[in-house]
Length: 506
Image 1: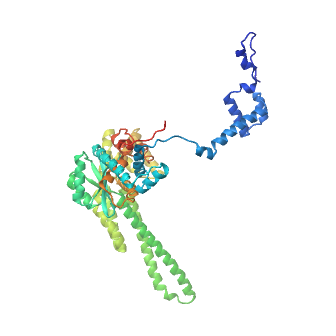
Image 2: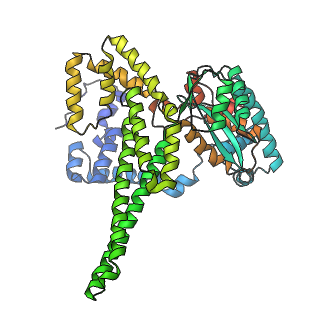
Image 3: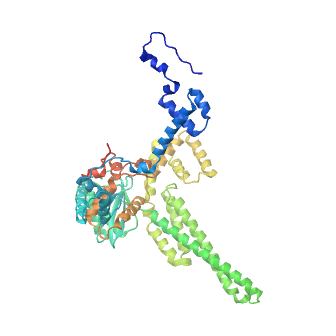
C-alpha cells in the first residue's frame, strides 16, 4: 500500500504542489518506461499494473502507445536511411586520401577509383591525376621505408613470387611479419639476391638465420652476401610433396581396387556362361597389382606420418636421433622407388639433398632446451622428454602417463619447466609460412597490374607494413601493424604517415 505524508499547516503552495498532484502525474520517467514495457510484453495483467501504481488502465495503455511509437520509429527503415548521420567536407586532400585508400585498402583499379569518386562524391578526376597521387605517395613511402630500423629482426624468411614471367624477390621478419624486401627483377640468380641482401645488411639487417625453400640462386646469394648466416630449410614444401605423393599412391590403389571389383563381377558372369578361363589370367594380374599398390600406399603414408609427426615436428627427439629417422625414411623410399619411379624418385632426391637444411631448426631448439636445463639445473634428457611429450595425443592415456612420470621426477618444478619448454618451441620457427602468407596477399594486388614498377612495390610494402591487423590467430597482433610489432611502439595511421588526412566525426 502506498502512503502519503500529509504536510503541516502553513506550508507554502510551492511545497504543497507535489502533494496535490495525482499519482499518475508524480510517476517519473523510469517508472513510466517500466510500465510501458510490462504492458507491451504482456507478462502481467494491465489491471494489476495500474492498481500497483495507483493509475488508470487508460494511462497505462497511453504509456504503452508512446513506447510503441518510439519502437516503430527506431526500426522504420525509411526513417533510418534518410536520417543525416554526419556531414563530410570534400577537399582536395580528402580526395587524395580516398584515392590512396581505395587503391590499397580496397584493391581498387585506377578506373574503378575514378568511377567511385564520380558517383559518390561528384569528383571528376583523370587517370593521370590518380597516377600522380599514387606516385607522390610512393615517393614518401620509399623515404619512410629506408628510415625503418630493421636491426631487431632475428629470423628472416625469403621467397620468390612471379608476375608476368618476372620474379619478385620477397623477404619478411618471421616474428612481426614486417616485409623488408620487395623487388621486381629480371633474374633470381646468386648475383641478384646477393646485391639485395648486401643492401639490407648495410641498413642493419643481421639475422641469426633465415628460412627458405630449396632455391639455388636464393641460397647462393645468401652465402655470398651473408657469410656465416645459415639458411634453414622450409619444412612446409617437403611435407607437402611427400603428402601429395602418399595421396597419389592411395588414389592409384583405390583405382586398381575399383578395376579389380569390376573385373571380378565380369568373371562371375563369365563363369555362368562357362567362359571363366578367358578372364582368369587378367584377373590374377590385376589382383597382384592391386595388392602391391595397396601395400605401397600404406607404406608411403606411414613414412609420411613419421616425417610429419616425429622427424620434422617441433616435439621430437634430439638432432642425432632425427637424422637416423630421416635417413631411414629416405632409404625406405629408395627401396620402393622402382614401384612408382616417376613419382617417388623426385621426392626421395629432394629429401636426400635437403636433410641438413630441413633439420637445422632442431639444432636451434636443442640449444634452447639446453639453456632451460641449465637455468633450472635439471638433466637435459628430462627437458627433452617434456618436449617429446607435447608430440603425444592428449586424448590418449599415454600422454597423461608420461606427464605423471615426469611430474614425479621433477618434484614440483614440472609446470615451470614445461612453460619454458613450450616457450622455446614457440620461438623456434621451422617454416617460411610468413612469406607464403605474404605472397598470397601480394597476388591480390598483382592481378590488377600486368607490369609492376619499383615505385608501386615501395608503396605496397609500406602499406603492408603499416596497415593494422583486424584479426589474427595470434592475439598480440590484433590491432597492430607489422611495423608496430617490430619496433614495439605505437605509430600514426598509415595515411597520416604519408601526409594525407583521415576523417574523424566530431
